[in-house]
Image (tube, rainbow, N blue to C red; front, side):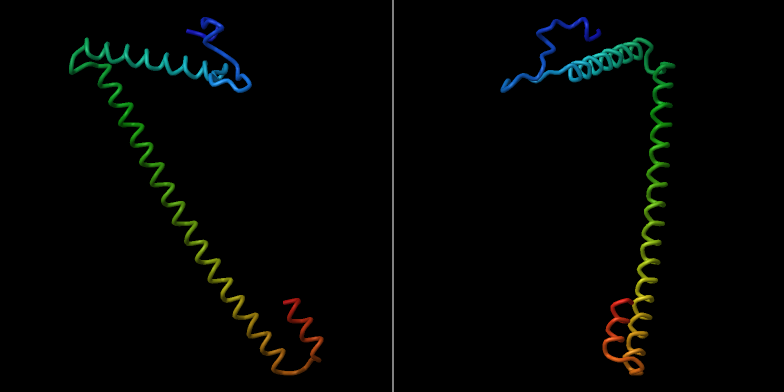
Length: 128
């Protein structure tokens, strides 16, 4: 069934203040879903006719098994990627802590030595 097969009354545009909001895209989605349900019912009927050891049933089961394996591999890869990201974040935080510690020690050294006047030391601290 296609969109052209539908009567105009079943595919209404969005009206101002109206409650029925079926658009062309919604109608097409509904038709696609109906086609998928029809194909599924046809497949189930075929498998029931062939019996428990149906070649079609075996093929469908293999497809399902294959997709589940692909999905589990994808989840494992995503988990590994997340672990790497966490490790990198920890490493970067450690580097930032070290840099901050070095900066604080340099500031103390500059202020402690008293080599510069107060204004110069303030400007140096602001620039760091």
